[in-house]
Length: 105
Image 1 (cartoon, rainbow, N blue to C red):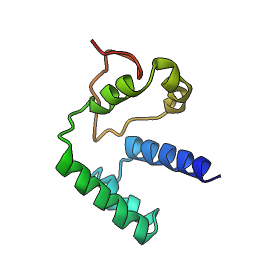
Image 2 (cartoon, one colour):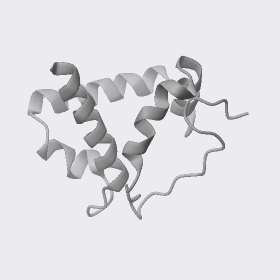
Image 3 (cartoon, rainbow, N blue to C red):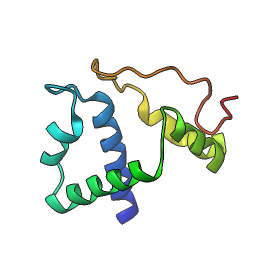
Image 4 (tube, rainbow, N blue to C red):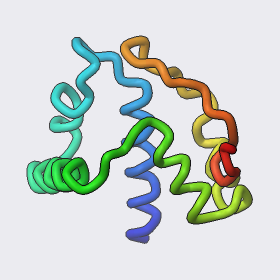
């Protein structure tokens, strides 16, 4: 049951970030604190802060992890979940050369 809650939470968190418009497009500062309990928000920001210290991610790095840590077949069942999402006008996304789970090269 916990796994199902985590799956749905992460799905909605991802979608909310992609689609969020808001005043300045600042999902973390304008919207997320109103949807999470204080403890969860505190630890999420702590995670992001520590993560940013340890990893120098560029756009597309998560795609590389997906390609390295699973096959296309492993990730394909989730790709339909992104259908219908409308990217915020504040932020665009550069096109990817491959589907999750495929080598971009």
